[in-house]
Amino acid sequence: MALVAAVLVLTACSEGGRVKDPDTGDGTAGDNSGYTIAMITHETPGDSFWDRVRAGAEQAAKNTGVDLKYSNDPDAGKQAVLIQNAVDSRVDGIATTLVTPDALAGSVKTATQAGIPVVGLNAGIDDYRRLGVSMYFGSDETRAGTAAGERIAAEGAKHPLCVIHQAGSVSLEARCEGVRSAVPDTENLQVNGADDAAVVSTLQAKLQQDPSIDYIVSLGAPIALDAGKAKESGDSQAKIITFDLNQETAQGVKDGTIEFSIDQQPYMQGFMAVTSLYLNLKNGNDLGGGEAVLTGPSFVDGDNIGQILPFVQNGTR
Image (cartoon, rainbow, N blue to C red):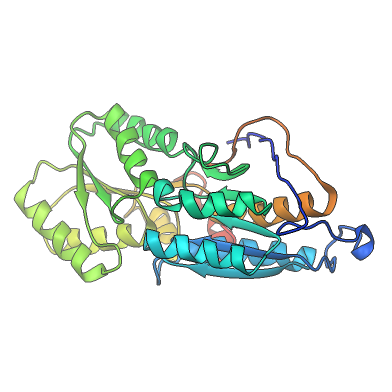
């Protein structure tokens, strides 16, 4: 899917987001910019998705001479504290996920009031403007869910099970709502995504209880692997689709154990979030258009997995 350009209205002030000497570098790879940018996410430890987000951010920081401070916590209150800590340390810019926007609103406001430019990534596409965040890099999750639902509906889906692995995540709920818009009998199932064994056992029990489930919609690559284990232990014939990729799920698409993935290109999200902050701080650059920059959704299936798999294995897709 083509990227949709978006406006980046960021303010560089004398507090956070201070303007640097324009002679500190020429903007090329290896520029010693001297900026400090904090990236704060809701990463659950062990979720390989975030390795790609962070890898993209680190490459962008290397290219531009940025000192990248990465931190994460899946607990919304603790993520808000991490944002406040970044403000207190007077970083030059902040990139943050907005998976629980209301819980983060106060700390984000503190950052913008301090003159620190803030961009959103990965989660919060429907809320970033309301929070005063100037830019967003990620997928339109409602559109992604709808696209997935329409595809499986065309394949005959009647009763998909949409597995939500993080409570309160607006992005995951939007995906399931999108699927339901195309397949009305879609059922949501809440699991603890931080505990793979618990996910497997919960899915096993659900599949045994309801054999009419014909598709398992995993909202994250590790959950797709758990779904595969749950299927192996029972008689379910449910097909598995997933959002996002890691090496194992990409191989599953190639092998046919996973029907397809809806990819949002997390490496690009991390890379663009850091790069956009750098360009604004250094040159006052804006990305025009007024809308979020979309990094997905994009289908990965048997037709294109051969092209994409090497990049997944390299950790950049």
